[in-house]
Image (cartoon, rainbow, N blue to C red; front, side, top):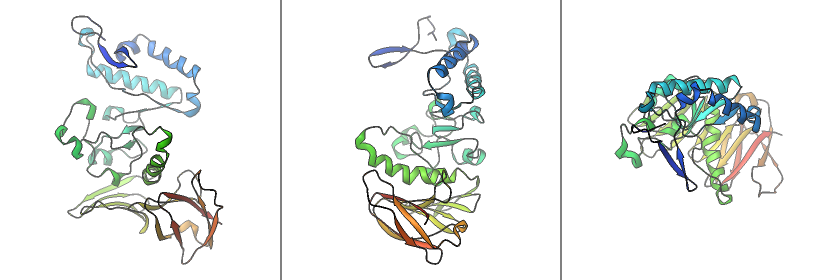
Length: 314
């Protein structure tokens, strides 16, 4: 890309070196994007993983070359289709409506309530609220801060829709913080994404998201207490949860942020199970699994602060 005077358009300075912006539309038209993707797939086993994240994947017009914003959007669509032809899904930082059906996940899902109702999680889901423009810390940037927040400013209560992790947690000291966010955010988020949003109800006292499977996610307005019920059975109550693990059959994930002693009713498909096995989920906990008795289709779990466990039929 070039400035109006023909000079190269600069990007950020990374590790002390100046970067320069590339026109996606011109690179795609020249066939260079396809070559880079092919070489990348030869270099790394990305196709085996089936997913790749392209950071800062935003359309940028180049008036010097006559490349418009629309040209760039079409090129990005073509690039994502090419990745998909190689059996790889593309994730990005943000989502715009033009990416529907092509980008299944945006790290910062910036859709508002109407956008969430429009697209089911099978079309697009998201990581977290890092770029929600309705947060107090971004109040000076509402309602519109440019393309980086497009197309919408996010939801008022992101947790009601389910959200995961969308910031950098990478040092060994962050293990406990990562675990807390994984259990409190990602586990319920994954379970909710297996359903489709039916309706959104916002009253003076509560903010609710109703999903298929008789799943109701609710935020209480007065204190922002978040609960999730499935068939009227609590599976999330504030910082305590006992949620089905979406990746393992007949397995529940239990977690407590501050420690709790709580009774959890088991799912309907656990009917007839009289005992369960409770296994701690921590690399620092060597205690053996223990059995617990099921009473009236419920199990009583005692968890310490920051403690997680799997619950499976004994």
